[in-house]
Every structure is written in C-alpha cells, then in structure tokens.
Length: 395
Length: 140
Image (cartoon, rainbow over all chains, first blue to last red; front, side, top):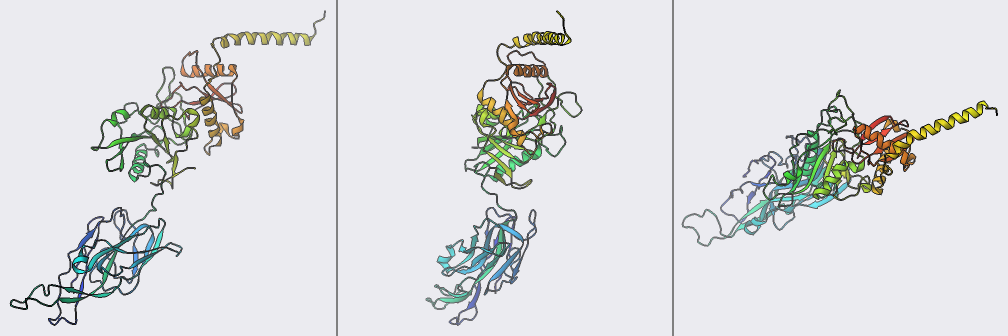
C-alpha cells in the first residue's frame, strides 16, 4: 500500500492524495500498484492557525477516531468508514476543513456539521472537490474542502464519510508496463479503489471582526496601522512622554488598503501633530498607490495634563512636567473626537481624517462639517474589547 | 434739615455705585461692539461641548453635580467683555476685537475664543465666578 508522508511549509496545509489500490477480481496478473499521486499543496488564504502550537496559535484539537488528521503527519491513513469528530481545545472561528486523499469524482465527499460551545448545531455543509482535473483522467480527485460561513464560535465538528467508500478504476490502455511481445490490444486493467481522507483545519482563534460600515476601517491593515500608530504614541507612558503620530491611508490598484507614517515634523508633541501630509501624498510608498485618507493619534486620556502645546507669543504652555506655564487638560472625545484644527485640515485637502485616541476610540472627521455639527459626529467607533483589533460603531 | 444715618448710607451707596459705573464704563467703551461671538454655529458648538463634558463619564470635578440644563449661552455684553479681557490677559495680548463665546455653568464661566490656540487645539477656558482661571480644556 503506497503511502506518503505529508510535508508542509509555514502557513500551508499540505494534503496528499493517498490512493489504495486493490487488485480487481478480473486482474489475472495479480496485485498491481500504481504510483500514488504526488503530494498536492493547498494554500488556504487567510488561514491563521491549524490546530497545533505554532507562533500565535494555541488551540489544539482532539479527533475521534484519531488517525484521520493531516494537520501534521499523515502516515498510513485507514479508509474512512464512519464519522470523524473533532473537538477544539477552545472555540475557533472562520473554519475551513480540507480533506486530502482519494475521492470518487462521481460520489459525495463528506459533510461537516459544526456545533457552537453550547452544543447547538450551527452549520451543516458538504465538502466540495477543489480540483477536478484528475476526474477526467482517472475519475478520482485528491482534495475536497469546505469553508464554514458561520461567523461565531465553533467548538466541535463532525465529518461524515465520503461515498462511495470503494469503487473501481479501469485504465483503458491496459497495463502501463506491458510485457514485451504481449497482447497489442490488452483489456483494460481495473483496480478497486478505496476512499481515504486525512483532514486538516484552518481557523482563526479570535472572532472575525464585524463590519464597521467604513470601507477603510474594514481593512485589517488599516486598523492595524491605526493601532500601531497609537502604540508608537506611547499612551501608556506618563503625560509629557507621549507624542502624536500621524500618517496616510493608501489604496492599492487591487483595491486593498495600507497605511504609512508621515514624518512628524520638528514641533510635534503630545499636543500637536506637525507632519506634512501634503508632502506625503506626493510620495506613494508603493507604485500605483493612491492616498485616500489620513490619520493621527491623540495619546492623552481624558483629564490628563498635556505638555508641549505650541505657545502663542504672550502665553507659555508647560512643555514638560515641572515646567512653568499653563498646563491644559485633555478632552479628546469632545468636539466629535478632533480639535477644530483637525476638522479644518480635512476641509483643506478633502481627505477624511481618522483620529484614534488613547482610549482606543476612532473618529472619522469628514471635510466641510460645520462647527455646530462636529460634536454630534456619527462616525465614531470603539474597540470591541481593550486592545482589540476589531472596531464597532458607537451608536 | 436733619441728615439721618440712613440717608448717609443711601448717599454713600449712590456715590459708590457711580464710581463703579464710571470705572467700568471706559473698559466697556474699549469694545467697539459686543465681545460676544455671533456665529450661530460656534454658539451651538460651544454649548454642545460644555454639555458633552457635563454628561461625560469623565466629567470635570469642578463641574460635578451640574446638569446639561444648567449650561446656558451668555449674551450679556459686559460678561463677554470681561471674558475677552481675561483671554487677552491669558494670551498676553490686547486684542480689542476679540470675540468670545461664553457659557455659564453654575458658578463657572466656560469661555471659548476660536483664535486662541494651544497646539492644534482651541481651548475651552474655565473661570470661577470671580474670573479666576480654573482650567484650560483641550476640548475643541
């Protein structure tokens, strides 16, 4: 019985077709083996974790029976005859199940039933063949997959077996290694095939973020860019040690978004961002990228003292703790999340300005909003939990 | 005619008020018109910001116990003149045409001058009833 070890690379689930060939009863030449197909690799977009401990992943699983798992090693999988039950050590999200083995193209490929932590069935979906090209040649295929649509937590799944479990495959040209001088028109050589599958899992350990209602904030890269900027502002440090960080939001030609930081300028402090957005817009970090928004941070919590405010000719604001001068107090959530200068900067260049403050609240300041409509800014979001990368709109 | 003690008190009070009026008059006369800002959008904005602070979970302790209803826009020219004078003092300037927006919250004056800047912010400045500076809030 030919078997193949699975190989894998980072972030790649490897599945291999395992073909069990049993000589058919009409095969007088005795048992014959056909080389098992080469390993096939299926890269699953967006997959984060696979059920074993690796960087950033801690959820494991227990499968019953245990030997239908291709998460790591897939030696000697037996034919699947019954349902496989997989229990995750913690609930997972956005689950994809990939079966690698041998499927009769004209059969069914098994079904996945998912259960939430309360044990309620939340989804039932069939696996589908990923690549049917081999079906034309040999009437079997090596990979079947299903991505569950249920957005919530999944604690357990069951995988029912494919059908048929055995079928016959006949090579129309006869023996691929004919005996010299043998029959020039040999009868087809047929094999009994037995279905097999080893299963791999791709999932996220954190819940997927809900839609924000803002096309830019729906981008994980934009949200991560805002959080990175906030982190670089050091809101966790004492007043006087923080700094505003700003940047631009870009759209690639393929429609995806990313952020870049704008150099802060010489007078940037925790009271003021002095970066030159207009200059930044002229220099896309990637070819073809187009600036579509800008952002900066407000690193002070409400009621914190703020240092480093640019002084006017006759007034001196304290530039650091202990400095003589007026020490103003932060109120970052008033006025719709931005200073009047923030609001006016959007009006001057027609870019919306995203402000993320030390409490993790994000505000979108649109151009041309008059002063009396700023406090009621409807474009505000908060983190779904402290430090989370997900945002939800504040009603 | 007998001048009673009560009459003296009345005369004294009259003289005193006359002196006060005389001393206040020049200060008010320096303002070419009312120092109260007249932009309706700004008036609404300042009032909303003050009321937002009053309802915020992070409300200012010096405004503790005050409700949004207690905040009211001030249109008294004398109050605005005094507020403008205090902002001038804070800014170290003698800007005669300063237009300020004043909201009275209990015993506190909340004053906003859009041209008075602290970094990127246009502060909301809180004074007590004697026009002593209480706080400068980076709220706008």
